[in-house]
Length: 234
Ligand code: ZN
Ligand code: ZN
Image 1 (spheres, helix red, strand yellow):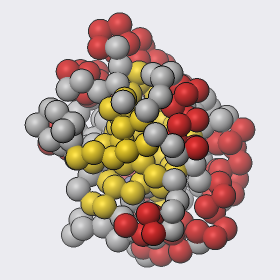
Image 2: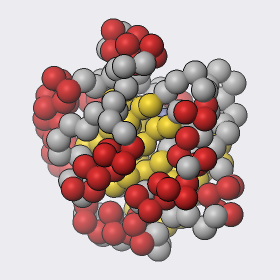
Image 3: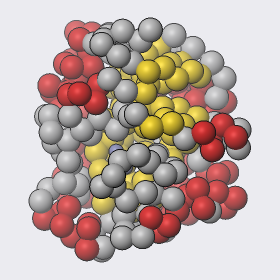
């Protein structure tokens, strides 16, 4: 099975490690597939304005450079480690209210999608680009300082049809509500610093190829989660 992590931040947003070193960390740890998913924040909120000011967000004007750099690193990762690297973002709609907040990973994205748009527009545009749509940390998390992101879960009847998979586990947290609802699932590290390498991951029973990976996640067959520790998945 392919060892995968679909939720990784670099210094393009609020990760502490730059892209190239992040690639090497995962490559050396034996990963088969990873997605780089730096934040794209809603710049209209107070949080978003701060994030943009401190460069904790990929902005539209930098997006082509961001994609190009991931593309270059993806080629190096494939040649050196046989690891597939996918370009993505984390659409970050954060507010002071957890009920109004939601984060969504868009993976295999080709052109910029703004976090200022309504969810329906974001999902439709992502579908047009055939990007994977993943609802992340969708329920109460154990992180003390974090504001929970409950909007999509609260409105799941409306939005579930758009969502390819939900994060059933994020870093050290497990969200059992996803399995109770029998929603499609994956797990990811929400990698921001080196120690986050050791966290929940996804394993996929499919070819190491983008079309097969998307199909495997969307059909949600041959998907497993594993708690990756000390460099080995078991
Ligand atoms: Zn997030
Ligand atoms: Zn994240």
